[in-house]
Length: 449
Image 1 (cartoon, helix red, strand yellow):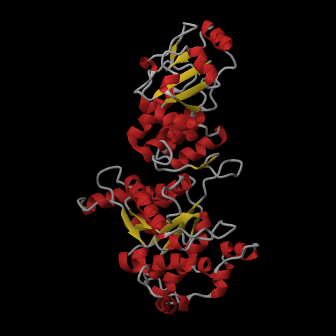
Image 2: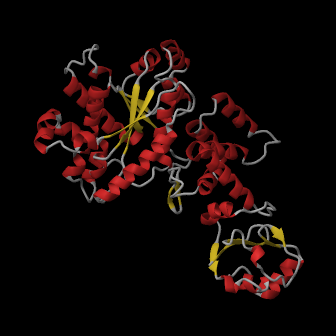
């Protein structure tokens, strides 16, 4: 935004009110003061969201925080991503029934680098004139802070009664495992983040998931006590600090969206392929798809309303809304190239597909398709029925021959007519893969060793 004129900036952030936008899209749960709606219409704010390095990649649940930051950015404000290099060494007790395992320093640093890369990529301004994201790490101010300084400056203004009253703390204290002093102080560390960012960068708004409400309140209270007066004078910068939470990403049945059978739905392509990411979104139910189009995409509300109306029409093609959701979210997370890979692999593995295959598409789909390894010597020159029985696709060679006779067997999406078809080097895609199909849905990816 540095190159934009004052007039251009004013036009930019008065075009849409971010609080109203979030409310319309189901991305607003609680807010510390309704004044934020008016303030955000009058001035360009710096807004931050924290991300602790609990894994090398962020996951779909974290995506809501990124999307909320991006909406602030698109409405003329500056997004600030806070890496929890320090808080990640402690562990947030919110929503946890037991204390998180302590990670070693190398793991934490690797995780910080991984999520920083993702945050910078996803918060890259989508159009010219929008603010460049700012990324900071709270280890920069906590790393050299001694215990005595922490107790004198921060602990002195904290009240144990208030800290104990936080829902996340109460639940843990009532649990069998209890809560350690380390986790108990987490809310002070997160609260001081707000104080530091307010004093040093002029940041006035913190956003987070609804499970962070207690920690966000702790931050605004700490800012009031450390930066201002107890009376919350309206002219006080501390009194104009705001907190905003968004709902957790839940399905209609109340379970978390973004948890697969194999674990979290990671945003990094190195931990989850764009194809598998796309496929998960494609399986969204009709009950959830409109809600997630509002929360997870930047499509205009009018367009989403039209999609919702079309779903009740007799000529509606099933899963159209799901494809729109999957394509938009995959494009945002993995870019155009990631979406292309996902669509290519999806088309290649579709039941009865005749799409020409590539090793890239098969590699992307490997995690979602039954896979077996086989030596080159067990393939070249061997009859196809022998191989399909060997890898367990059919119970007998006679069964394979019957399927071939009926037109139900394919190699790399090409129909096989020879009942004793001899496998050759030409059947191996890029010297690596062979895709066998027995019927439309029974497919097996052979990895040649």
